[in-house]
Length: 416
Image (cartoon, rainbow, N blue to C red; front, side):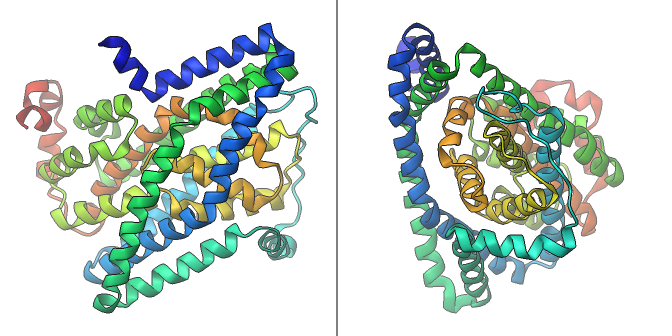
């Protein structure tokens, strides 16, 4: 029974694949380097699917948001808050990766990273034009953005197309989950090839990268979300304790969506208006995924460091703009953050997609990503409710009171 459960656990399979790849790289390096096609095939499949999947995800998300935005007075505030959090989370991931440099001097073939800032205003649009001309991803994303806006503004006339788009999203996400079943093979191939070619020291940057991402997410929670919570008048730590059951569920399942039913119930009991909660959570799981944003920007800098690419100020600005655009296609579904990263790297055209192969091995270890997403959306519900004058502060104080948080049986999850 226990063995069958472990066999069905994706995280366990990934860890086993990493251990096997590491062992093969140490014991039979000449054989290990021949495992590279396993990761290349997986990345090729993901890479070819990126344009279609990103178009459908972005168009569907923007269309749904536009439709709800017409019916909700606080839609403009939701958009402004989500945009601010997206920019700050992307900056956090990129800056922490640049400061901690987890990928610098990681591989023997890599050159040192020496970013050199240049005058941004004079060259930024030229750089963007060059990026658009070298990749199909950005034109696809722009077309999806315009299509989604048109469908959202079409009202009832666009409803049939929106339903078909939603159906297509479900089908593509199922196909993506099926493709992710082969991730252990890709992780095995990537780890075996890297260790076989570069030696056991090449596994060290992966550990540094995981630590960097966890630190970046913690920094974002403490500095950004902590400051936002204080401005609104509640404690971030108390809110985290209040939704601890949902966070545990996400940590053990790896699915952010698993927390949605409990979050809706608890946030409404904590004084947030029902329409605000429904709008913020439903759109937040596409537009307010701070953890995924931190992962994408941090990982993009990391793979550039691995490849020895010297990122200057212009390239960093273009990186942030592209990640802001690709973040529109993010969802809470498994693998969507890696899909965002693939689209970002393809759009930047700075490093080969094969460089992403090593990251497959630690994809399932990024629990900080999902937890940050959930906490960010919970904070967003309280903030937007307060901003819209739809927050019952007495109910919030009662829900977050220390005596209530200390008693597990009194939690909403316990009453359910």
